[in-house]
Image 1 (spheres, one colour):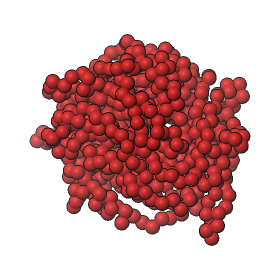
Image 2 (tube, helix red, strand yellow):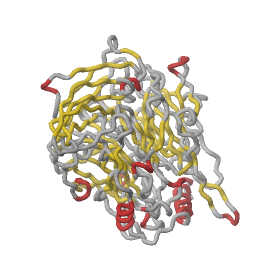
Image 3 (tube, helix red, strand yellow):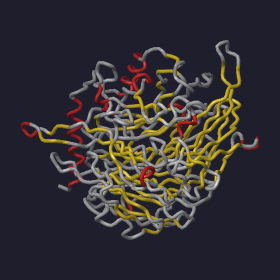
Image 4 (tube, helix red, strand yellow):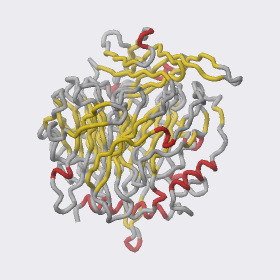
Length: 615
């Protein structure tokens, strides 16, 4: 049997083993979510948390958290265990409308043609129905397959290129595609040679680890997860600005245990990009040949480049305050959970079938790491009420109705043979400015649920939409060869302000990947006496390529401003730590797109956490 086939089938065994840890009285996920809602504690205001602010609570709660399923794209998958595939959102042809690249990794159906299993490029046509046309062949992308994708401007020419990986390939599964600016791609042959591409490559992330203004890549070795198989090395690849990459030898970041997802981000605000890795896939043979899952830790590789000019990484979870946190970690999402201008982290994992405190072991719970402003993080997932919910693949922070608070969405589903209780139909938590967050009606992703998840505004109405790569039917064999990419349009039509920000790096990489953008703005909130008052608020978002699960979000940042919100000041921390402040004129304070060009001469260096502490 093909090695990768064994790996995913072994994953089935892994999660079947996990099912014995948390057995649900009901296999109905909707009933379990309702149970979770009914057992949640009463909200507690976060008066002791600096910067935390309430949202305007007057917005109606719409079905499916306000998202409508408007488009689908059929894809093929394995007839035996489904697919784990990502999606990338970007304006590939430069027409101002978001496009989507969909991975498809199927190569196991006998008699399936190349046309039926190729990766896809969908050109957005705009409008609230999420209309698109397939342009895969015209774009030069027809034929190859992939499981993971990251989009970014590899050659700094102003358009989005692609790096893809195929988890089914024991060698040579990494590809680079350069965009000519019109959405037509050319593969850069041997851009990542066979020796540099890890075996069974899974996640792809882009960032700049040496501050040379050229994007580098981290590709995780998803591994041929047969019990007792040796852990294969992942690859840190240094880009030369032409789409070609060289392997960074002995970087210190090669051997996280069985990684699922990795992301670049300056987590200690010292002016260089660190690497956070979610690991998930280690198995060992137990007595009687029973395969046992071994929980694996979160890794945070601290980059020393800013200190000594050398690209060298060291795992320092203790220094970041997280410590050894083992689990089956599947995703990474960055956002500002409490409006203090500091970047926080959500990490999802296997979750629980029984959605109660007693029925969900600590080792299976999701994590929400609040940034303490001093280079350390504290897990507040239990307080926020997000620790206990079903299985995660993709995850993202998103402001559902542009209220000014960042909400959380997750999706996930295990392959066949696993109880339906493990299906995450699209869990949505609304950030109310108090703990716990409000669990909303799930997304209309369906019982087949999803793996890859990407966020971006595909109809340009100021509200971020969602695209999810689905598994297929829960029970084979009927239609088990088809999965679906689902387009979910955000219809939360609250009359709130918003601001879009796009960065153009000049001494940094062109997309500003790895940058953090802090916004100071005014908005109106209800006071205790139900009277409206004007307040000043802050929030921060980051430009990331490669997070969620095997996926890449749009690089355009959307800030929700709340009722009558007016943006005042933008502060950009560029990937090298340099700070740039932009005061916005009145004509660009709401419902506008603002482009920030990096000013290399005027940008100053400094600790980013000083934005909030004592500001």
